[in-house]
Image 1 (cartoon, rainbow, N blue to C red):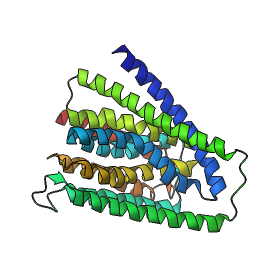
Image 2: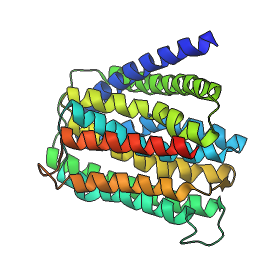
Image 3: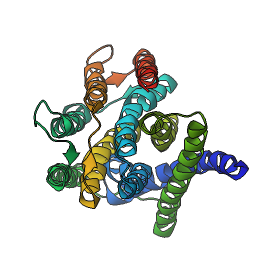
Image 4: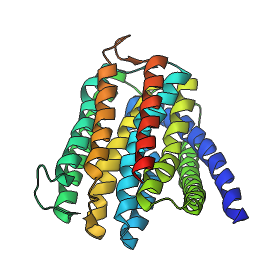
Amino acid sequence: MVITYILFVLGIYFLIKGADWIIDGSSSLAKKLGVSSLVIGLTIVAFGTSLPELVVNLFAAFKGSSGISFGNIIGSNIANILLVLGITAMVGNIKVKSETVWKQIPFALLAAFVFFALTSKIFFKGGDFLTKNDGLVLLSLFAIFLYYMFQMMKEDKKSIGFPEDSNEPDQKIVLKLVAGLIGIYIGGNWVVDGAALIASQLGLSEYLISATIIAVGTSLPELVVSVIAVMKKNVDLAVGNIIGSNIFNILWVFGIIPFISPVEIPQFIEFDIGIMFLATLLLFIFMFTGRRHELDKKNGVTFVLFYILYVAYVVLRG
């Protein structure tokens, strides 16, 4: 019991250190490859910060706990935008690139809508499970996203020209990235285990635990990465990390799970997926209110308040 609490605290420390290493390593890697921090955030960092969700959902799939699978992914994506971007915007204004506004965010909206269509009986009558066919649809969209990232990387190389010189040796950059990913992976697991133990002692339901405690736990890497990125004036990495992580969570993580076993779709899940879509849409709308293509502190407060209302609803629903 005591060890779990100790690991919980150590997990938070590993998350912070892991995030710091990933930001430093990925920034150096961006210079060496001649690509923007946005591309690195949308790919390498997004993959690293999505590892906790993947691990949790793989274990949930093997154990047949569909409530944890859905709660973790949907809850994590909602937390990524409303809580993580909300807190990050409260730390400092987030200037978002035009291509993120018109390409990455709409792709995240598309991913959320397709996921809603696959799980909603409005579109498919009588479908109670996510099957391999559904997983194939999601993985196909994920392949398109990766292709788009590859094309974006090639354009970056043309516009940036020759890669900038980086003072750090390649071995040190790789070591930072690997150590950061390991730190986030271990830290995320320890934080989730500790949070789950605390929640279970309070007698909460499986979905409630996964949509709140575990979702926030697996979103901590995104929060730490984004806040530190903004403090280091690396805003592209902060936004790219969040959008990329949400796309990875839906298309990659939920694309893989049905191939392990069919995932039962909770009866009430349409509302939660709707909130996930609405949160992403709200992010898009905020790009055109106040300062153009910028999230300010007022937007951040709105996001956080919206998240508190959602969590309150989930708790009352049970």
